[in-house]
Structure formats: C-alpha cells, structure tokens
Image (cartoon, rainbow, N blue to C red):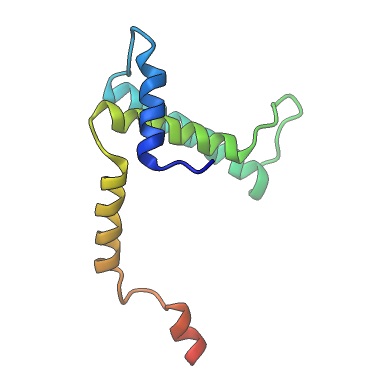
Length: 112
C-alpha cells in the first residue's frame, strides 16, 4: 500500500501518542538521527566500501537502516509541527531555482 508523507506522519504520531513519554526533546532526537545515520553509513560501508563485517556482527539490511532514519526524522518533524510534504516542496523549489542550469539534462546530452 502506498502512503503519503502525511499518512506516515499521522501513523507515527498515533504510535508515539500511545505512550505517556511522547516524543523525545528535539536535541535528543537530533542525537538519535545522528546515531541512525551512523548505522546506515556503517551498513553502506559494509556493502559497498572496504570494511567487511566482523563475523560477530548481526546482518542488517540497508533498507532497515533507511527506515530507522526515516522514522526518527518523522518523529523530529512531528514534535516540531513540521509538515514534511511542505518542507519537501520548499526544498524542491529551492533546488529547481538554484540548480536549473547546474547539471546536464538527459535530453540535452542526447542531442549532442
């Protein structure tokens, strides 16, 4: 089933809402984001880099680590009242303006 970002934010909010503790503080969640990003980096390095896993290390999928990172990012946004679809739209507009002539477009490359 496909989900919109709003649906994912609502799902995470409902999940967190069942606990008295609620969301962690923004600073604690920033630390969690950093931790999850490090775990993703470690897995990417195992799969594509020069650092093989130790025999004692549990096998984790990159997909799971990306999911962990996304969950914490949604928690962070929810706790601050940030609509991630709106945030995405702002960033895409910024990139479209800033980078409109920065990269070689596929159709331009094929014409050469």
